[in-house]
Length: 313
Ligand code: SF4
Ligand code: MG
Image (cartoon, rainbow, N blue to C red; front, side):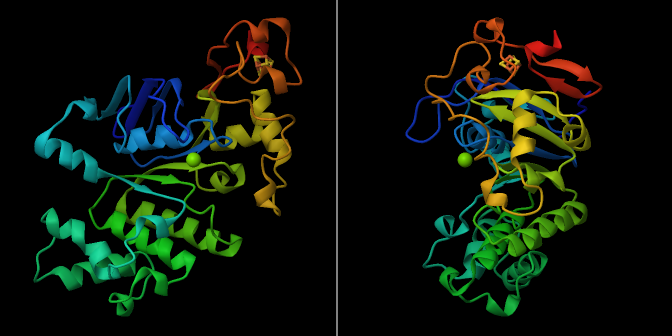
């Protein structure tokens, strides 16, 4: 039961755009308040699209985004503005989303000022608090983004997101561009902020080893569909879906994170023209005749553990 404070994104195929976006095919996910959900899949599986929809920065072409039972896609005026502030998104490349001509204090403080979370008089103190919280020295508030390292720029992006007092954060490959040692620092920061600010996260990554330590629950997507979801420890101990199993086998657990996923057998088919039946059948070591004909449905294989594979029926 999801007695709720997260979001449900449900939609059937988004409009076709240049990048991913055919993208998600009848996916429903629910996130409880305070929960960290890891959303994992190879590139083109639709996870970024799902993240954008959940964060409210892209409307579903079909379906709903529910926040405590209210469809936020139907809101307008102040309620819609509030919904947009409540959910914030953090991206892989903070540099691309930081205005190079703006000082850090304005990057972090602009939206809170516009939305009345601080005043001109309180501005400096407000910005400094956000910077400190994100692990940045407030003494640098008058610097520009290019004067910071990659890890620090990600902290600027985090400070900016926190400054509007969100409850829900969608991280899309938020550490993928960083060195492994810096990745760990940023992941630790996310976890510290979670408990300090009572945040809920949707943590999107192509890398299972990144989500392993911080997720309460893991959702695995393949070519626009959720193929498995379960509590994190259950996924890592008793993966059910052959795709998840192949992901786990392909991840050298400690080193060479960057190689994760490159050793799942076979090419990723085009998401624009996915295989019939179970999308995974051309790569699956257990494929049977019915796999190319029938779409497997998600079935509860253990409490809270869902998998979509014909081997379960
Ligand atoms: Fe493999 Fe068939 Fe299960 Fe798909 S439904 S994962 S092809 S066994
Ligand atoms: Mg992506």
